[in-house]
Length: 461
Image (cartoon, rainbow, N blue to C red; front, side, top):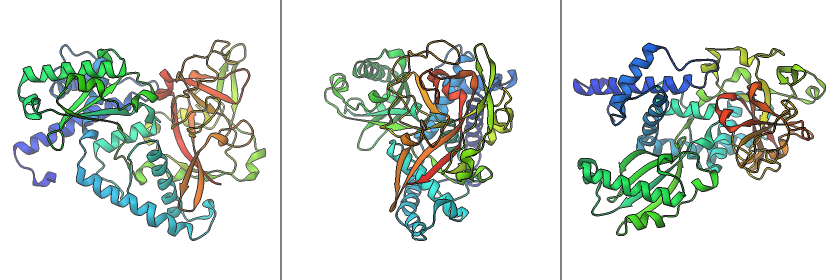
């Protein structure tokens, strides 16, 4: 693979152009999650409009609302097209972690909170690796300090740190048709339009969605004459996205060999030390069970802002997540007082078999939505109903009515762990049912802007 120093002339210009496009696209993406921040100044918008036209020249009369989509498409392509040789090397390193390193650590036979800092970090990265793999995301582990972190991995980091793994599934359909070769598709506009039209029709029929909900992110040349269509479908339910039937594609391409699979935009995401922030590591022993503290306040109709109790995650070892990109702009959300600008502390469990609507994945909507349609004790309004309409949390990590019973079970070597996530949540968008005051919901529309995981919690069981 060429390095920058080996590039000359036109190659360097292309390198700079691509790097500039990725920086601008990433900046839009990151800033969209910053509370009370605009997407950018008029200067950045002007630059972005120019770049977007070169990235996606098919967009006509681009307006500001298109910028987020355009930047996401750019970054998505960068993720999808990561170098296979790098992925293979990271896969080998990940396997070493799981096969050797973890067993060596566990042979020390020490409680999690008594292990040295590096051993704890390795256990944590392995737990995250195992968790994401169970969720169908082909992440990797790396022990390297990645000073030259790619924009693809930086983008993926933003997705992970804002807990959006449920939003990251995309689909890949491979079509091997002798009449519609990759070269013919990309070189002949008539053929390209014909193939895309057939593909959109097949996808629309296969998933029962309108064509305007389908976004083709990329068309790639695959192995053995296969043409891979990379696409996403807006609003596709979790159970639908794993549907890999191909009958409707076979109708449109009757002579083709066809394959289909669901993938994730955090596939090949590198779980590295940059993901973590040891300053916020902490263990909560039994003494914390009687301590009383508060983080932020919840607006409650008729009562004003009511201080929110912070229930410590007793018995868990907590590992800080790197949230510096948000702290650099605004630190008020991460405060330790009762102030209304401080985001409250809630816990998000991960067990796919969790009951009563506790979410089945990392910051993912509760598919059962058990308390949808009931009255909210904070607003006196009805909590949004419908499958997947709300993300569920608890204000307690352990004890009665806590998230602990719903925590994801992870097996590493010869030991088992519970994993869950400690989050800061914008109180403005929090709801809570009358008949289960320790449960909290955030409507899925607001979850990605209003939920920030900042610690991973582990407990050996």
